[in-house]
Image 1: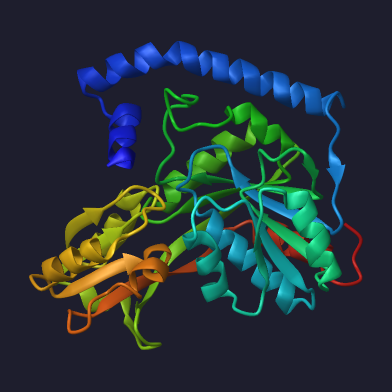
Image 2 (image 1 turned 180 degrees about the horizontal axis):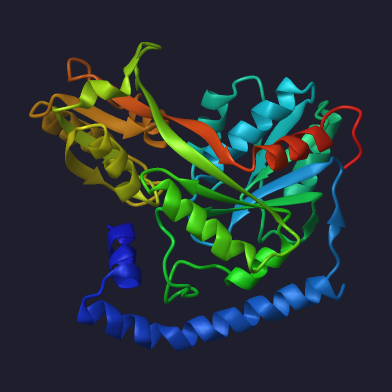
Length: 340
């Protein structure tokens, strides 16, 4: 419910939403001023940054959720492992879903959740890790990492209104701190993503750019390892269950596959109850499919009633559409034998 209210206030063209945004805009100016002062303090060395115990890549964004940080972070970590590194994933953790997703995607890569990410990286080094990947680390300026990858969503990009008048944590000028800007898309067109990347690069002339498609891959059964082609939902009624920052992009992916979507969306990081799972399972009896995201599957699977229609999640495939050489160079830089 909270996410729906925020989406309405931040994005709706209705007169009530516009009035509320206008009233909140002065608070956004104050927030922006505080952000600029904080960044200036770090840039000038007035606030000290802490050196990290491992070479570190930060994957972050400028907005409140919805850019694909978790799958991109997991993808980077898996590529580091393939190159012979011993990566770890470090995140603050705003819910227990994110670490569970990382463990599901990369079961052999350690994940640590700790608000003190500086101390967490020390522990990971002592445990044998050779490189750290920060999930949502761009605003965590206390930690002096070696590379910043900043994500922008082509599905969710809109007017830059700082909190609380909009979802932006920093203005686009903050992209000047980025090493690589990655535009992600789920259902948005490649043209839209390319236009956004071109616009973003104006704020970071020294950064490199890339485009990543978080493409619908396969349907995976939540109670087993069985999988089916995602096209199986074509011409079928689908109960789309999501507790993510951008449920519309998920639902648009299902519609693009030909599904007739019935939305069952909750606030980001929502902790499902047994009663909610039972209610969703009952609703699923009226549909051919009950499909959620992996972020929801790691919470719902244990609560899904026996005898109910099966619950599936739509897996995402990270497909690099532009800037592959920049991302490859980043991975190579942190591979064994390289010097960040």
